[in-house]
Length: 210
Image (cartoon, rainbow, N blue to C red; front, top):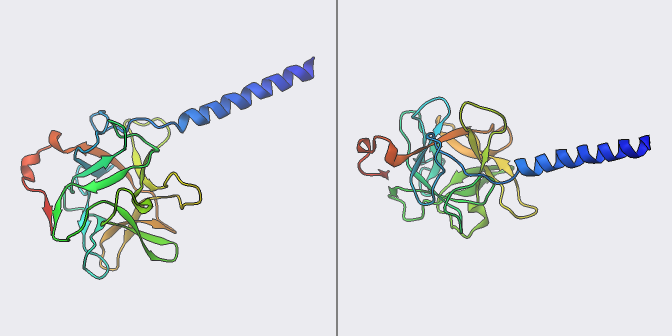
């Protein structure tokens, strides 16, 4: 009887732990700094945790030609990005997304994010992507635990078996440019989101770059 009871309790504990793990992995709405769910097609700044500036934008790196790469500019508010999640009217965590910069550029190509191989085990986040392409599928992940506010990061982890899965972080280029990338020794870059139309948009009347 004692053995049966121990086995039953062990099974209950196993099921509880695994149920909690599954629940923790369930997609949930990504929220902005005001606690509102991110909406598809709406512009958001992607800011670092520690300030309301230095957001993600586009820049020339490597050979200084197109395509433009996704970079961090500490002296700039950043460029608005938009998110798309097919069939959903909000942006969830742990779900394949298409991410696009809502700006005009001099490069005659889409501003959709894509992963661009640059070396062995190293990829830059670049543009010129395609919403149907595997290399343009990114996810937003919420940092687990209790925090004063929600903290997020990007990762390249398409929902397809056998594909690389890695967090997005910062690589400092030879000229000091902070390029978003994945690869060896790339630490996760944690962010928060600020809806464009709830900020002082008059400071940036025409969103364009380069």
